[in-house]
Length: 163
Image (cartoon, rainbow, N blue to C red; front, top):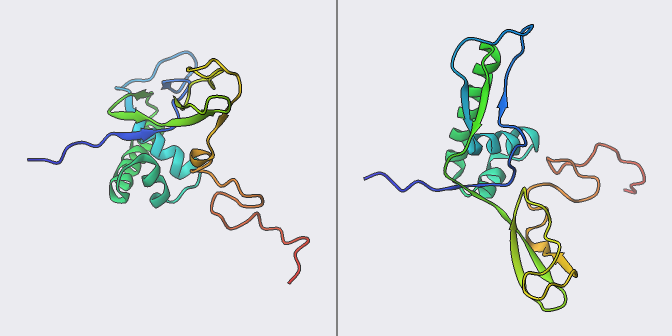
């Protein structure tokens, strides 16, 4: 019996779901390449955000080898579409939309909102506008330290440092 499928955590929903080449008004031949949301998230975390596979796999809630397989599959599909001039469609799949946590400063109520949705304007319990994001889940996948790049090695400038 196979292991149960683990849903992947997704932090970003794309604004568009289809990409394709334009060739002077003609459409391309061939079936579109389907890239899942989990594959797009793997590309975003590893290639766009510059995270290591270990860090990205923890964010997506999968093992490091599984993340590597998802990433390789996404890279293969996107390169195949680019080389052959095919359309790319982004499809759903089994995933969990990651959430950010907020706390009301007036009543102390904590509540969540999915990434990709607007920031809540008021507390759902008391209606207060005095809500704040809880720091425990803020900036967990991007470096927020001053002077550090996505690899955590700094920005290359050594001005103002004393030995």
